[in-house]
Length: 313
Image 1 (tube, rainbow, N blue to C red):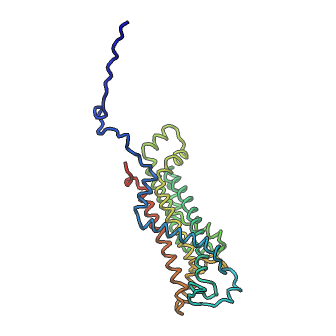
Image 2: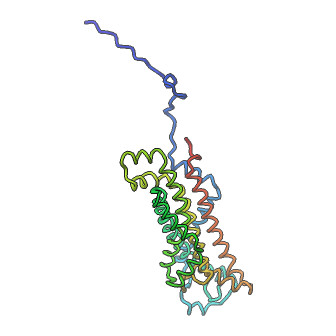
Image 3: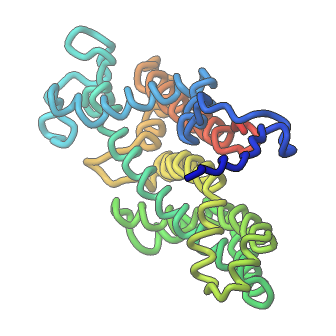
């Protein structure tokens, strides 16, 4: 029996089929999260800001547990020296009520940071949802929602907070809610712009043509492609919430005693700075300003990390 020769098989290289470069099997594809982390860590100020925020957060929440100081008992504080200058017993001195100033900064920071984070989460959640719905649905829905937003933006923000707190309550829970639900207006406009753009792109129109519901497109397409602005505006929302609480505290409308916040402490410090009690305002002012600046640096770095044009192809 004679065996027939095997048919010749044409072997074509990658270049012969019209591609510019051959496939390199040893090429390593860098995951997206590693690329974003590399971009973020390239910003040294942002890395230093993260380290500073972690240090302050750990100090505010853990140091008082291991080295407690009296911050709530006014009667006990009266027995301590008032307006005492820094010493080994009180590293940053005492305030006009006899409370240890260092412990007071950490105690007030616990409330300021907690309120800022929670109010910021409320802000970005409400603003993202409102902006996506308005931008994606468009038409009459967008027009009505934007006119409502314009009406809100016409009200002075701090004046609105003062009015609501004066009428209702100064409890910690109410401060978190009221700062959170009144700070999302600017965020909603940014997210709306993303939704207006994304709904015109090919993949969103293709999903609509295939019968996908609007909420499905918002959840699967609009939200993931808006994550850059969501994360960035969310970071800034935390700083804005801390500033809003501090402004209220400086005006005497912050957290009620015996609790305190950084704004209330700054207000008390300005009343005594003329007497030479510098330790009641300068250390706190430095901590407070650096926290706000650090959050803004982190927000800028997050915006760069999510910028598609900076990622490797």
